[in-house]
Length: 316
Picture 1 (cartoon, rainbow, N blue to C red):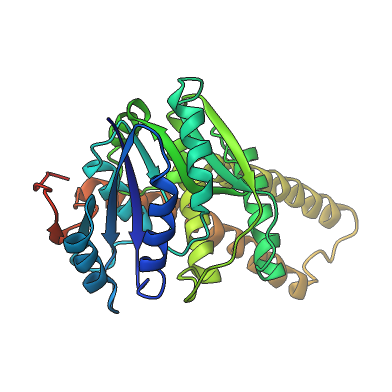
Picture 2: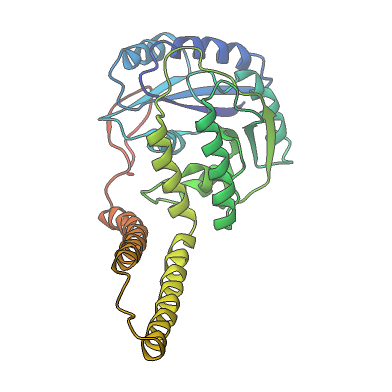
């Protein structure tokens, strides 16, 4: 039988993980000719999530789990699951049931017949989200698609089912600063988008605050675009041109009318404005330098504390 690997990142999901398994297992039981392995990745949970995963791994067949030594983030959890997936296909799903298990048969059908290498889910609305967060999210997709050659689909979720070939291609990108939405798109392959409405969490609270989402957006922009560096260069050239013409204007005014030394308040404002532009450009350079610094240290993306099932240690 063909094997489907379901990768489920978990962080403090004790209220949802058992319900997720029950609903997903009911859907997967109807898949014809397909065996399913569940790879739950405990991303440093501080509640009873790991205890539940241990119990599921003991009581249920096909359940495997990984546990990190601390919280390394969802990107690391998805990578760990992909590295340990043995299936002919691999799917990434959230444990909070915002990714409807009922879509799995449809996703598998699209990839199984070879028409597509990936079937991915995008939400067509943002009902249930704060309006401000939704507005900023839409602006982020507009900005990054203008800045980058890699298309990031508005409303794209991490919920997707991929062929073995696409998974292997993703694993060839060992970068430390990971932005999976961009990586999934960058590797290419034929992708079919399946639209769905927004589904609220079945229980618990989202781990993504507005500030975390903002940092994640900045990571995405710096990971797949060098446009901010070009913006900084253009601003520098523009300000140099403006200052040159201003100097010429001051000299001409002094020669013709005299008394050009007045206006120190406006001069202070100009100095503060230019200083702000300089700090902004230095901040852009600092972002790229920081990403480079993290990459060259070559620290592991995640560290396993323990694991269950028949998994074996791997190098990361």
